[in-house]
Length: 337
Image 1: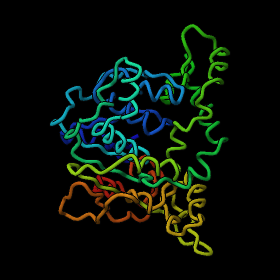
Image 2: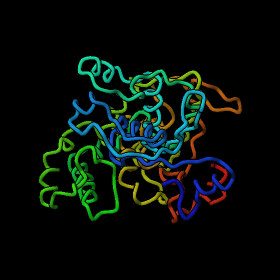
Image 3: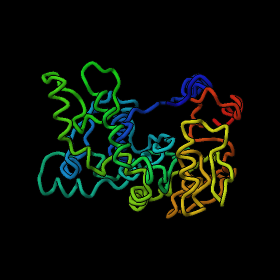
Image 4: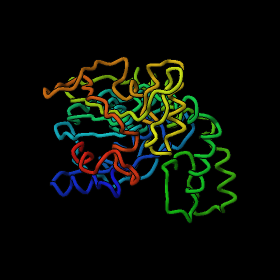
């Protein structure tokens, strides 16, 4: 994910002596599920989505087991978190859980007994130095409102996830908590029939909903700024003025973003039209309900430091995977990182 033929971001940082880890979380999961997975990816152990959460949404409480990328992670042992696209939302949610826990999980355990993950107890501050988001829809994206959260789109994505959950597949998309993983003792037909009964098909506990403006508004109400953390955002744009004040995809934009760029470029609120192909500039800069300032050489904590918009950069340019990109040189990309 982080880098490709144009720039090997992870390898380059490691070659320079940095301890860099590339997390593995669900591709289509909700920010809550992904934040929990990220916690266990770092700390190690079997993912515990929480008894209350599992009961509320109807998926399994426990997920995959991670070896642990940094098992000694604890207060005082800080890390830096960088998230691209939805990843920026996910790391914000993780920080909130670390600091404040989950009142729902705490209350559920009081009523029903059983164990509870340390993550849900909160009080784990002083574990993150900085949160950096890149092309993150902090206020949601109309691409999800108008296209991504439509039933047909979700159906195609989930069908793909289901196909990758069969025993013969070596590709996973991280939805095993919803039953999208064929068991050793069931046939493919039995697996498909079981998956049809999953509550995944109707839930809001997924990434498609969390990327909508409505879903993201809920996230913004749940999260807050930590006065001890440095926050910074980067956002690009790759659209041009069109008829009647609209914005349309630049001719050099990655063709995969053209449809969504033009869709966003025609939304009712003109302030949201300029975009990078998936995320409006206004959404990528900072959560609208949280403090922000223009980024300068003076580092500030507890406030979103907004860097200047990267013109002619589309949604995928930041991670260097577009081998057809001609506007941004490898040197420019290296300078950014």
